[in-house]
Amino acid sequence: MNRLPEMPDEIKRKVCDLARQGLPYREIAEIVGYREETVCKWALRGGIRRQTKGSRPVAKIREMYESGKTTAEIAKAIGCSPNTVANTMRLYGIPVRKVGPRPKCDPMQIDFARTVRKMTWAELGRLLKMDQSSVRRFYERWLLRRLKSRAKDAGNLKRRPKS
Image 1: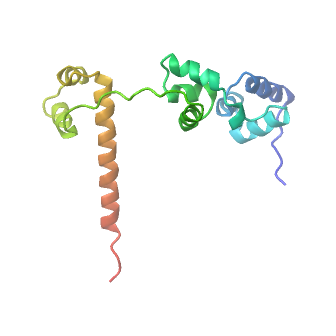
Image 2: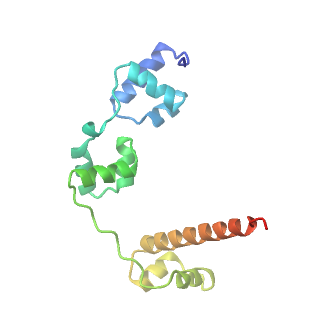
Image 3: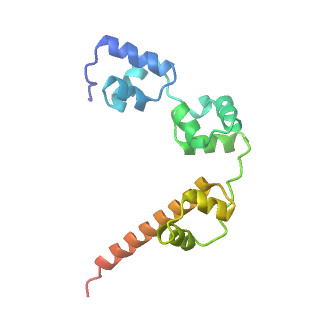
């Protein structure tokens, strides 16, 4: 049988108070200096229930999303994953915003402009008639996919089947 580590009563009270305020267990664990699992168990023993699908703060999610927050920002605020927020929105029919426009050029052109021409993100944004952060995100995602693909290919070259 697993025993919980001894925790002073004042820290137990602090864990329960912070959990009642809606702070995620991960943040509470950082504050009190114990593991997240330990904090979760002590909060449960203190009468704090975990969030279930039925207790998702739908009104808060709707309000925050309509005020312009992203699913990642909402997730951090309520202490769950962005996927949970997106699934809750879909489940309760909260309309989703459209994703911004994609650059109408090849990512290799952006790569060339950044590395050879030494263009800034602001210059690229003006050139493509887009927000500079959208161009940067598009390029960074493409670059990450490219690097993962290269790493995968390199891994496949190392593992040759036995003849």
